[in-house]
Amino acid sequence: MSKVPESLQGGSTEVTKVGGRVLRARRQGSTNVEWLLTVLEHRGFRYSPRFLGLSDDDRQVLEFIEGQAGAYPLPEELRHDEALISAARALRLLHEVTSELATEVLDGWMLEAVEPYEVICHGDFAPYNCVFDGSRLVGIIDFDTAHPGPRIRDIAYAIYRFAPLTAPENAAGFGSLAEQARRARLFCDEYGEVNRSEIIEAVCRRLLDLVRYMRAQAAQGDTAFQSHLDDGHDTLYLRDIHYLRTNAAALTRALM
Picture 1: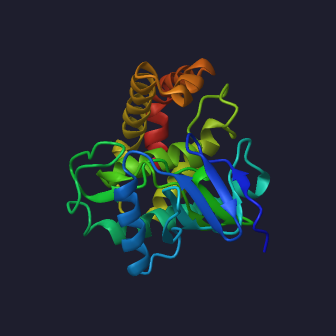
Picture 2: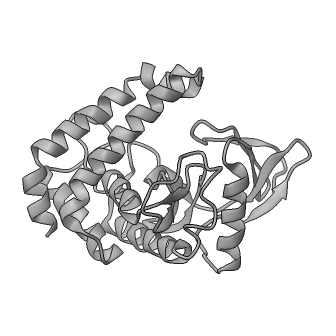
Picture 3: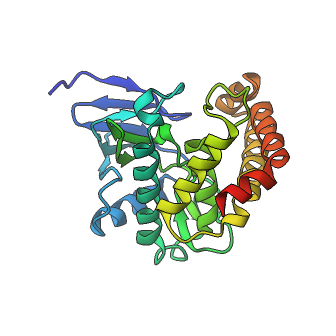
């Protein structure tokens, strides 16, 4: 097993792999995330990395989950229904495991807790934060944005990313409107009980929250989020919102 440090993609967080371990820079909310990962391990949740402690330079030490993380444009095996189905089932299991934890820690997360406190949301459940063996999800990573909130908040963003519910000009998307609707319905079918009439508007609210958060962080000097704005990510999300609201009636009918 190689002990040579290897840089990994980690969103806006510095991530290094050394052997079978991952070292991540700590940031706002890390103490809560470390608590969450420890509880998930103790409760037998098999998809999250184990928290192994802190390094000498105060970085998180996490278990490395073998497999392929989703990167855009998604390869064919991650566009397969099996990837979406296994993701929906894993998200449901995460929510089931955290439903009793939702009110235990309300402060100190990177993202503010959102009422009603039903579960601990992952906060960024998307192919790029999942690990796959072929088309089957085997791991969920990057819990930095985890926070207590309503389960539909997580479900909506997951459907946005996995269906995906994106405008035609979004390079991360694929499939016709009908195919997007079919995959969104399949996600709901596999997740289980969810208020489908609220999904499309919940996606739009979640994307608006994301745009506001990105702009606020950039205004406070966060260079990573400023880079996202410079690349037009906020404009892309706003176009997706317009696309979803334009097609909301058709999508909602297909979901029911």
